[in-house]
Length: 495
Image 1 (cartoon, rainbow, N blue to C red):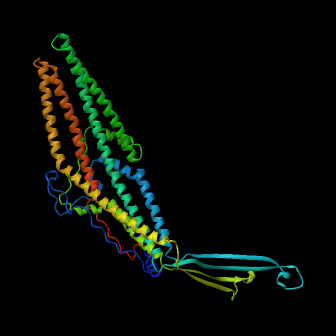
Image 2 (image 1 turned 60 degrees about the vertical axis):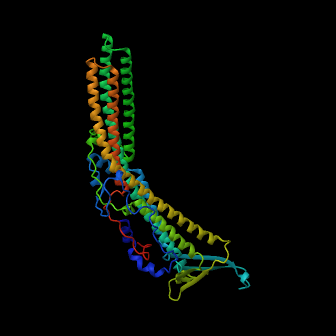
Image 3 (image 1 turned 45 degrees about the vertical axis):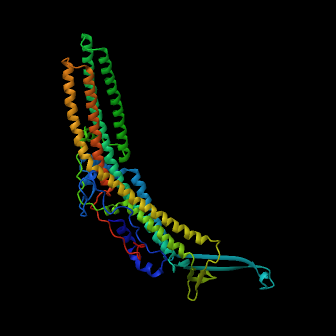
């Protein structure tokens, strides 16, 4: 159920009464600012196939994040992540603020009972020659309305509309946070897997260099090698030992980050499943972005919709500021019974009522109301700029991710070819060294080249997979999701 549907369920029955009680508003007509970005995605060799104007896509995150372990981690994060909880409570507070502002559209009916007993002396009132005391009693029971403002100029209604739009902005901010948490968990798992793979690769390299070091020492002892070869082999051995500690630390930090995003320690079965991810190739890949993504699709991003909600709220504030220049009409009224004898309080003929309308017109305020209106207009311009910047940021994020989509595949293919050729080079160099044809330096260079190519392959694959996560996030997390249209302004403050 959408957040609007939830509010409609709570307030739909009171819509007719609110419209009756509310007068006109002075909210300026809202016009969505023109998006300050290109009408289509960038084109060129970096972007691969051109984007057309027909859109298809995925529905929800479970259809994009298909790896079982990743799904489990994301599900835990959606239940436990503290940033999501903070955003949820902020949205609830904004909803309560809307309720507060909306309630001012309706009169508040209070019931009450009062008793007054006053002691006086008769000589004060010249009632008799006696100076003895007498008691004045008054009892009353009734209900009434105190200082109810008739919203002829829409001040209260404008404030209610602004509170509603801020509530919607906060609710959409929570959805934006949800998308970020999902992407963050996926990226953290990919980072942990990449570090785990780097640890395993470095451990293999370290074992190999230990064997090579022993071999070089033997050749030096028999006279076919030199102490320089031994020193170089020992240097490479310690370099691998250093790298092993670095990647082991990075793997631990990636796990800490993953648990932080998940919001709870990982259960033993989840840790066992995570441990099976010995390389990025063991993580199930992501489906490709479908061709045909019009640039206006980012308008569905929750952060853009949230920024527009803040802009609408600032526009509503102008209406409230305008209404402050006009008279305020307040009504105080009461109805009930009154008597100086409590036993006759509810007898016939004891009824009492009063009505006290009041009109207040601002005459002189040293420019306060004018300044408040200027401030409201300035804040609207600020929100326009923030809304436009949000769109520009979203467009750049998608464009960068599309550039990655168009180039990472070719880069990964070239990196794998480099690893294959470096492996052949190392094997040939090692064989020639063992046969005594070449000095150890050739083997050392080939060994370093292969190790760098292997680490580069891990980095490139991590970047390619992370780019898919970034693109999915940049497009709003699920680009086939429909965005519910806004209701008409006449009932927005109720719905």
